[in-house]
Each structure stands twice: as C-alpha cells, then as structure tokens.
Image (cartoon, rainbow, N blue to C red):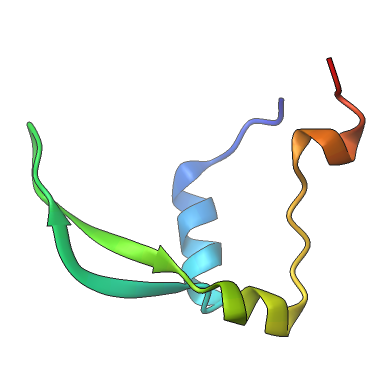
Length: 60
C-alpha cells in the first residue's frame, strides 16, 4: 500500500474541518491522548473522495 505520514495526515484532516474534539481521553502507557470524532456530514458537504483498496483495483 501507500506510505502515510501520520503527522501530515492528521494535520490535513483537522485543517479540513473533518474532525471534532470529544470530551474523552485515552489513557495508556504514555501521555493521555484526546479522542476526536469524524464529521461525516462535513465530508459529504465538501465532497471528499476517500480511496479504499477496492477503488484501486487491488482485489485479492
């Protein structure tokens, strides 16, 4: 598959207004992290196209 730069991906999705902050935090071994929710209605408004494996013809 395609390599993904996690930092840039998160920043671009957040700047596009596709995420909304929740009041929840995830606890783990390290620093707690804030949880976000995907805004499906915002994605539909902007007509974003998300490619999945099937869209690229990579069917097994």
